[in-house]
Length: 223
Image 1: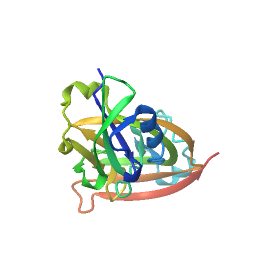
Image 2: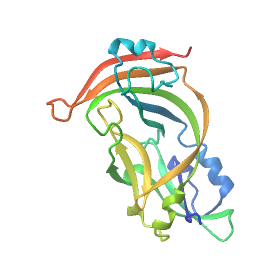
Image 3: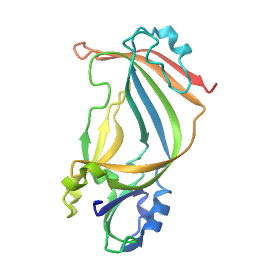
């Protein structure tokens, strides 16, 4: 059975109070976050810094090339949730599947913040591929595999923004939200991805004075 709470991310002025409908929530969510990026991380294998120019624009690496140690360790699409500009609305389902009621709405900056450690989670040498994309989100729901573990009675303190260091970034990125410790998932309708992508070669050594070293960066264009 689906969890009774539905989540909306959009500017606060757009989030309805009181009674609303599923169709209205979908329409409003389509006015929320509209950009994001695709991120893939690979162990570097024997790929040299100079070989970035030979890597494919679409990020599809053959794991059998570039040395046997080159393998995909992350493949994610991350919306730009923009906590500075967006708020979250929480809506409760009723016996009528098309009728929902707003039980809370507030700026994302007021949510609990939690740090999660994204890839890479171990030392080594890595390749990252990143490409901007446009997207349209559907209203968020607690992921089905975790819905039974989340209390049905709403508590604001149970909502958290997840922040992570991604690849060779030096600042945290908001990568998602949880409720009651369970992932909120947002259906995505994708538009055309950007015509350029970025490859990077970097290494992580947590025992070194400077743990992150970026060896090479290269922007590649659609073939």
